[in-house]
Image (cartoon, rainbow, N blue to C red; front, side, top):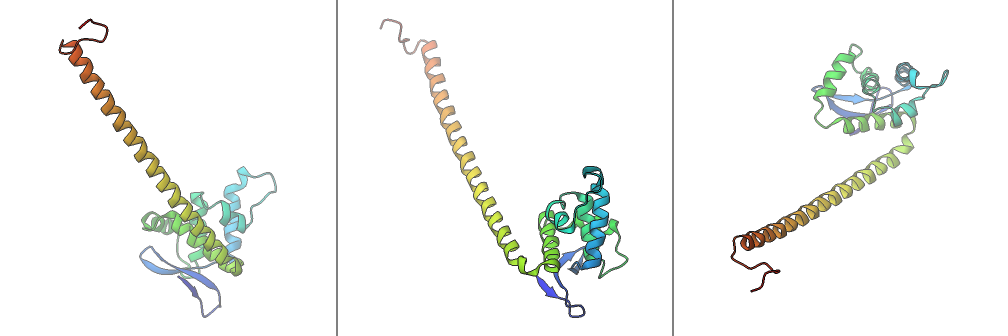
Length: 180
């Protein structure tokens, strides 16, 4: 749910996190904190003097669990200045909707702070991605079902051939090469 903070006019995303309804939002200060902390983590992976800006962090690096936790912490700090990284990690572990859903909420809150006009296109891309994923899952299920059906048919065919061979070996039916 998208809400507007009446005191600052800053948009945010309401989430249920760690047993509380919270407003996840980013403004300039927390975005800078995310950049600073994330770049400390990313420094060994980057060329000397290179840094990743917030749009890159929220767009590409939330898969890193430490960066994910830090970004969430700074997005919630406006509500609870005493919130610790340990509390955030515990909340992440207990989050019922899954990390992808939480990551999307973080990305949405970041976009709302930086470029609200891009929110609709972001949500449309997620919808298209979700639909594509459903199609892929359905195709995989159909493929697996087809493979099972083919395997079952092959098994029945093999069982019939085994019965035929057993009959021939027990003398019930002459072999094709034997005279009748």
